[in-house]
Length: 266
Image (cartoon, rainbow, N blue to C red; front, side):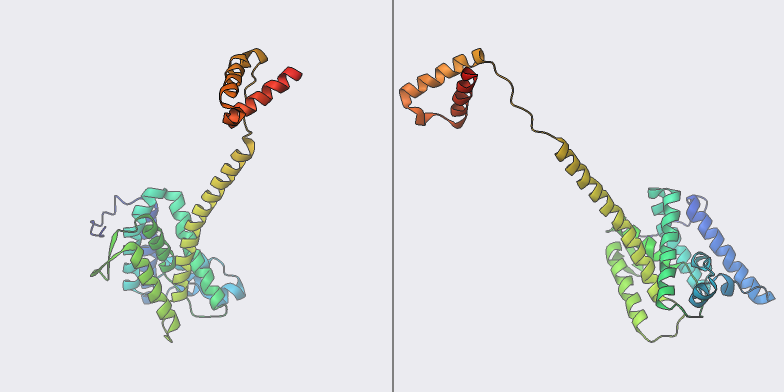
């Protein structure tokens, strides 16, 4: 699958359309306030770990996703949200999609706060949530084709690994970028663990169901046979003994004779 579909805004599912609209509108406010001297949205709503842990501005764990550091950052995240999000939302439904989107974005934020709990540099952008969408799409359509940098074709399952390695390399290098690479990996890992946990929970329920059914199932008792109903079969077995000897009897025939004997004594 190559993402070359037209950017049909009106046909987008509701969650993706709303997220795109809010994200672009917030960026427009950022741009406007930077010219007219309005409130510092990044300082208030961006993710600043030291402020989250020190002043308990916990709303930043969610609001930072709607802010971006520049037009290219915004365009990339919006493009990925459009390309991946509309497919996933149609498959999962709006509520499940929104829950997953904010779960991955929140997971990325938590990782960033845990890694740098006293940092005072704000982190912005929906990249953590976007990486979660990338994992979900790759698990749903592993052989779909991505054009990395709009040039290099990669299958979705390989693209996830490629981006994860890039983030690891960037996080290990001594860069001064405000892009929180470990937070991106946090969003990716959150999405992967959540989706895998659904499979694990399903398998656990399946095994519990099988185990319960196995315990409840009791061996069916052998059908009751009356004494007179055994007569013809016993006569045949006795005739066989007289001609071929007792060693010629099968296990079932021996059990039948013993059963017949017990019934006569009772």
